[in-house]
Length: 600
Image (cartoon, rainbow, N blue to C red; front, side, top):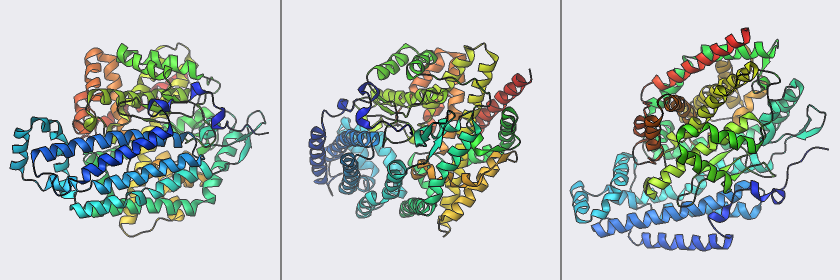
């Protein structure tokens, strides 16, 4: 009999997040939607009159911020409910309602930006003098001005906004199919018990010491994606086409340029990453050779990439132990930081375990005026302890920005989203290495450190290159089919893992299981974020209080400066290849230590 997942109703309350901190009931949520639309309708009355007076401009900016803040809260409530059980049709409908409402709000308020852009600079400066309260919005207006050449007429902006719901469809349909509809096969685990493969246990099963379990998991999992490859390719093709539509409408030369410019990041940062990683493939190949040697296999396969290189050193780490260890590891960030993380642990910010229909993976979602929420699918592994540290890093970034900035500047750009999370991970790793004297345990931790570089710098850059090349293919008139997507992915996998890795046929379908390909050039930021975090964490451990103070200024910055400039405050300049190269040099040093340790 297979071990089946718990239904949502069977999960203990203490391991679920408390959504009542946002709304006491679904009825209260519905009432708030009416309030939001009333504010939006008030806003709509200003069409054609946004800049008629300083008072009008201030009122529009205030109402827009109020609607945004309230809508973000309502959207978060619906999304969290939906993600805890995507089979629940009531919550599906609530989530779809939010998508529809978002498109409606964008359509009704699309006139605001074009009208502000049509203002003369002299008039704007006169308004600032006339109404000092407008100063709060100066940076917001500057950001609007920055994107002037990519902003359309009020009528065209309204039309673009009306396509929002339609543009979200490829990702929505993919998510439902991937999380709710797919049924993965059962396999026998190490003990001969039947276990059904799921998103939550896929990697833990690939970490098994039993190679037969790893192979059965790998082939069984990818069989499902192979079976639906044509449909999944059509979804992804639709995603890329909608990105091209928006980029083209906004007069960008490419989807890549459009995506990075939305975060005020130069495209050179993206190309620096891909180029620098490609110049350092020798280190990845050396890692693969070391893994092959440690596992003692004639051929290293893709299903061997997650299992620890150091046998029998893995141990179960309960959620309770993981929390305690994370709190100790984060001590260098100061008492206030640690106290707030502890508050999150004790006050149900976190949804801990997998259940039927629950969204796969892990994430943190900041909610202005409430607190962040963290979704996990926790298994008692070292990797999952790092996931906890990672997601609480996101949560603390949201907490600091939301506590320091007004709503309009509270949301940090996606570009810096992975810095705080990975900084926590590096601090956890350094704490564990410092507190172990056992040679085998040290080797096991170094293995995990190496795997973090492999998974976050090399693998995410491979994803970034895949995304860049698939978008370019469609921009050049080529359609994305399962055949050419699989061919490209297999080619990249072979390039990144090198000659000592067997790139199995099944790995060609891995593109189909990566939800981030529906996030519009998101993944490269994992690699740039990881590289930045390595520098920041090492600086905090070496320098102490001054480095912590700079780091907290960065965490508290929200979007009050460009993300590249905020990182410069913390001490990292991503406009050069230096941070990426420095991180890869650290990877090389850890490899060297691991090689020497295993020779002894």
